Amino acid sequence: MKLPLLLLSALALLVVAKESPAPETSVKPGINENFLDPDLKVDEWLQKFEVESREVFERRKEILAACDVKPGMSVADIGAGTGLYTRMFAEAVGDKGWVYAVEINGRFLEHIQARAKQEAQANITSVLCPQDSVSLPPESIDRAFICDVYHHFEYPKSTMASLVKAMKPGAILTVVDFERIKGVSSDWIMGHVRAGKEVFRKEIEDSGLTLVEEVKIEGVKENYVLKFKKG
Image 1 (spheres, rainbow, N blue to C red):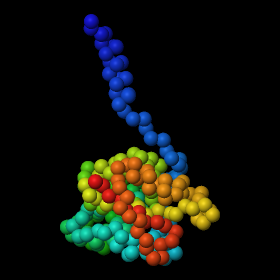
Image 2 (cartoon, rainbow, N blue to C red):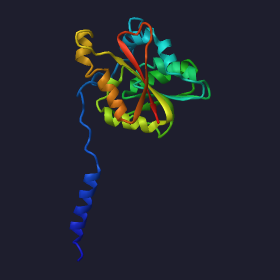
Image 3 (cartoon, rainbow, N blue to C red):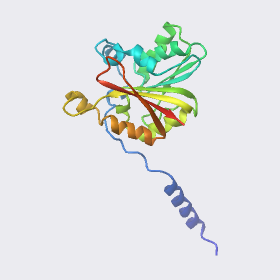
C-alpha cells in the first residue's frame, strides 16, 4: 500500500526532528552582555585586563610556559580579549606557526589586528564567532587556550563540541579560571562565576577530553590551571 505524499513528508520531518538535538539552553543568561556591546571600548578593557594587579597578567610568562607551545604549532586563543596571550603565542610559534584569536566582539579583533600590524606579527588570524561555537576548521589546532573565559561560555556543551572538533588528535587544551570556593573566594567571584573547578572539569571531560594535570604555578592563587588532551 502506498502512503499519501503528505503523510510521507510528515514522517520524514518527524525523523529529522528526532535526530536533531534541541538547542542548548544558556547556563547563565546575560553573562556576556558587556562583551556583546557593538560600541565596546577596548581602552577600558585594557585597563582591566593588562595590569599587574591582575593575576593572569602578572604571571603571564609562567602561564604561557605551562601551555607548552612550540615553534610551528597552531594555537587558538579562545576569548582572546585585548590579545595579551595572542601576541605571546604568536611569538612562541614563530613564522611557521599560526595563532587564531577567537572572539565574540569585533572591536577586540580590530584591536588585535592593529597591534599585530604594529608589531609585525603576520601569523595571527582573527575569528569572529557566535556564542555557541569557536568557528574553527576541523583538526586545525595543536593547542587551545581559555583564560578566565570558560565561565563566560553561555553554551558550554555546544562550544566545547566545536572546540574538540577543531583540535587535532593529541592536541592540548589549557584552561585557566577562577577558584570558586564558598567562604574563601571573593563575593564578586561567587556571584560572577557560575560553578567551581570540579563542575567545569566534568563538563570539559564530558566533551571528550582527558585531564592531563593540574599545573601549580607560584603566585597563581586566585586561579587554577588545568590541562586536557584529545585522544
